[in-house]
Image 1 (cartoon, one colour):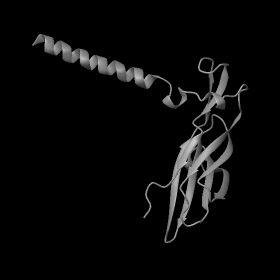
Image 2 (tube, rainbow, N blue to C red; image 1 turned 120 degrees about the horizontal axis):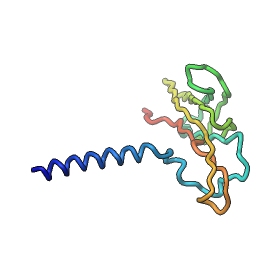
Image 3 (cartoon, rainbow, N blue to C red; image 1 turned 90 degrees about the horizontal axis):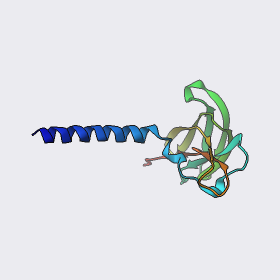
Image 4 (cartoon, helix red, strand yellow; image 1 turned 135 degrees about the vertical axis):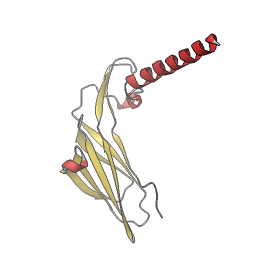
Length: 146
């Protein structure tokens, strides 16, 4: 009986320690580096890769980029695209909120998402020490269409 209580307590402590370990580490997206994307000098800007839904009706998608949160209303850039992938230069270590307005006959849908491109300096994973940009891809695709 006492052994069961001790085992249950040890399991709870172990689970608690594992959760602390997992959530205290860096973000998982920055752990693995694709060495060909490395840069020798620290970058100030990055290409933000914007993924858009395939355009079935050949209507342009209006994309707006805001600095910070959407409610701050600081418009950084706006453009229209018929492609499903677009790249835009943005500053690093700044939060950007993006909106994509899809014009579907009889309906208009707006997708909102945010991203903060960041740089990591790594000395171990590649042959030479380098700077790697992560959090540079943002998904603005529609999830549901009728």
